[in-house]
Length: 181
Image (cartoon, rainbow, N blue to C red; front, side):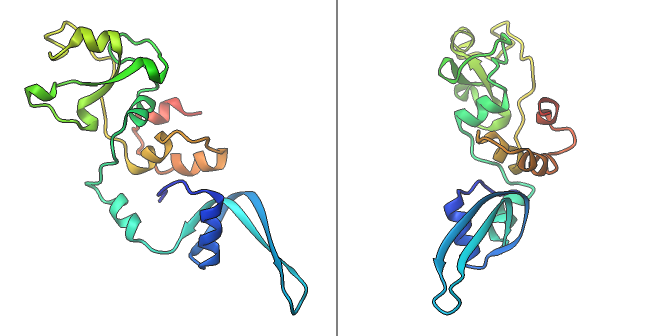
């Protein structure tokens, strides 16, 4: 199960601590270390794009049915493809805001299923009302991403083999599957 992005330095640490169960994907780096004083051989560590580590504690928490990834504006905007879910236009992050479908003041919650990406104009127009009261209609239904989808939404550059691995962990009916090549 995909858990998180790690830099090459942290991947080297996992290898050094012998916590890598297996590696797959393409070779990203070959890290060269020091020379063995007995054999004169230089140590070389090959880092792959995907590594599976020992220790299932984090995986158990993030793979649990009730697990909800943390909500942030950048991941929300990426979930909604930087499209205002009221007017349907695409915007830059700086021009977007988080809108609560059911306003917090009216009993709504700050959760994935109650928030959508909105341009600032549409969010101001909707105000402290429901979309129906404001005469606005959502063009997509908000959803809570799984952990694999959340890893994708964190906005990193993703290599083809990493994307294939992540996508294999997306639910079959994930709205994100439609957008990906």
